[in-house]
Length: 308
Image (cartoon, rainbow, N blue to C red; front, side, top):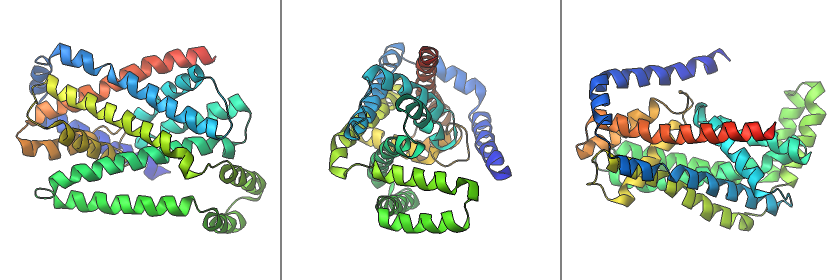
């Protein structure tokens, strides 16, 4: 537990170091040079991404025969988006489980399955984009390509194992028998069974997968427009969006809050090879992220108020 409390400090320290190294005066000066038209247009994209993500979740719920009105899932999506953006490894996005559990009166296992499936889909999409982006870095950063390739392979293996109920049942039985406190054994067994019984066939996840692809492309298009707002127009669109996805993968490392520090370090390491200065890259990363956070905060607070 102590380690979990210390880990975010690493990201904060890294973030402070990057700001100091880039120079606060340089960052402020760069901020003042932003194209307001491009920034205004880019601010529309997080809203579109959240709408798409909520549609994806709603489709998964319907495949489980859980019918919720779309405005409700959109509200909960906004709450989860904000919490995901400000927590290590986006763990806050799993808050949807508790809202769903309360709304539909389902067990924790059944309520969590839809959220876990959509998170799996998002991970696959982001890693595919990152793998494509790493191809452009093989010459300069061959190690990044190898790390992402290995990580993606491990992700696929983990998904195969995770969706194999027989394997997971055997592992769970051992954990439940020898490690689980007696008072939690029954609840854990019921939650485990409810979770796996509510998983849907992969073919029913095809449309949610396509929607997830669109949502993440929209997210990285916002980053592309943010970069353009600060004069970075020499990078092809496809290269840019795939490279930004590598920053998302890096920000999943649970050593920071909301990916701050790790994301900026990754963006500087990758995009500096295209001759872009560190202050400009810091500003692009911060503006891209803060637009999403502010919009998610506003949407989340409105949603929380409506849920009371």
